Length: 504
Image (tube, rainbow, N blue to C red):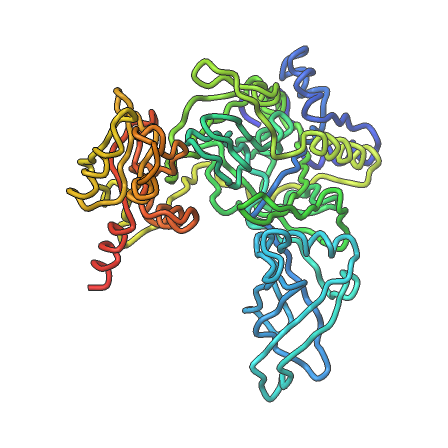
């Protein structure tokens, strides 16, 4: 290859594997080799670098073929252990998605769990309904199947193995529940995913050896990359892959259904990609260390697509168990398993050394210049800032209850935010609080105000506000900025006016 001093082909490396002469190391081992010897010498000495990752990959699922019943049925809808699968392709084919929820067990069980149960050889209940035709007269079906009863059970994942993941934290005063796990209030914790220096796509970010047709470790068996993943964004170091493999051959250690609290179900998938060291450029990228791999620490407390970046962090920092935010050390926890990722890289290394796994030349490289686009929206989404009342009447904690009662009577509203001398929200008083204080000896608002206030942000979508109002059985939310300063108020009446405008 032009511009390199080492030029090995995949065919040559495979021949070394057949002879038992190939030098195979894990990505973590390669970091030390490149650090000690440099990429040129490493490229001459090493033939294959193995990688591994094991984490929640929500965009996963499986194609299943049940075979024809007698009398036959053209399944219009089908449920596996009460989890609905997609059937709009043929009579007895279905696709079970990892994030589809059970209709009876909710977040406790979903498509990811069904897939794991099949891998484990468990019986899965199948229930189907149909509209009936002359050639498919049956309208209902109930049975049980294991993976051995299925003609095909194919793990087919649209988006796996992100090159890197962002790290997440939460600036709000309340705990939030996201696909990045539970995030505690006021930057109380940080979560992250990915395996850093072991991450498959970080070891070949230019896709010199990875592409369509690349043979990989998938769920404990051999699988393949068959396209770029959905939302593939290599220009932002967020490339990913579509993967496919035989579910019947997989191992439940590397295929695990899971529930992310108050978010939904997912599937933990183990993936390992062997990187053939064809030149010193690839040797250099496979020698990347956790100190060199960076990602963004994102504030998930801001409910919008372009959430603010608080700072850049390295995987070395994340793996240390703590990062610094505004001068404060914050605990970090991983959502993926580094131990299992190391195990995958080790197994893949052993397979190659034992001549059980050979490398495959991609028939086409993955694209490197694709940019991920947001969804096209033909109607503007209303945000809190569009509906909130900006001129808000407030009171101080030291003000009297009587003065607040007068405000409610004169202004004809139900919510009175309580702020300190700097305009920071410290509580709220409602007309109901005033009513129940009548006849008591309480005199000051500080004695009756609610300190733990449910709030909104200006850039929150209105539907988020509606969910909060419903969840907490309240009728109004003070609007605050990141510093907790009062910016306005939004009430159920504001939402009703919006609905009225939409209906006209």
